[in-house]
Length: 241
Image (cartoon, helix red, strand yellow):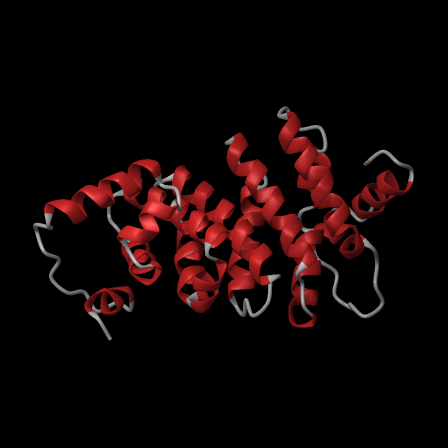
């Protein structure tokens, strides 16, 4: 196991205070352009770049964390096989990014990168990450930041497409708790958010219907038992297209 991998696994090692000029220049260029280019691939093997990004994703500096998340998204788009190989590490980093305590930019970039990765892996083998991602995405549906709301709706709708049997009951309860948000943001002040909400509602509509196999009733259902029928009715009558 090399030094970079040990740092990723929580075993911090001294980081050199200086770097060769050529390598330092290439890293500055990478983080300024933050695009997965042919020239970058020639400068650094994909494995090395991945672990550099993974290390930066845990940096105390929020700007570096933000750029690292964006870099992981670029890497997922251009070299998905490499990201799949380190899927558990990537998902762990992105889930931590979703819950970043200080930076909305890190949270936003984490959601965008997650949508890329989920599409590449088709939501397979998420394990308990599915719960962490779902809970935070649902929370961000009502955020005051337009970009966060938009990305949260896109991500939540994507999760609806990848629900496996294991998490079906859990996700159904989460969807029912988003009924207020879905109804509100169908007329969001931001047209892009409203459009994303409509798309997400269509993806989630099967989970809003009453199903005999679920004997529980969520708190949202108890508070407003007509809301679910109201949302489903909008879809049936063509109010949500």
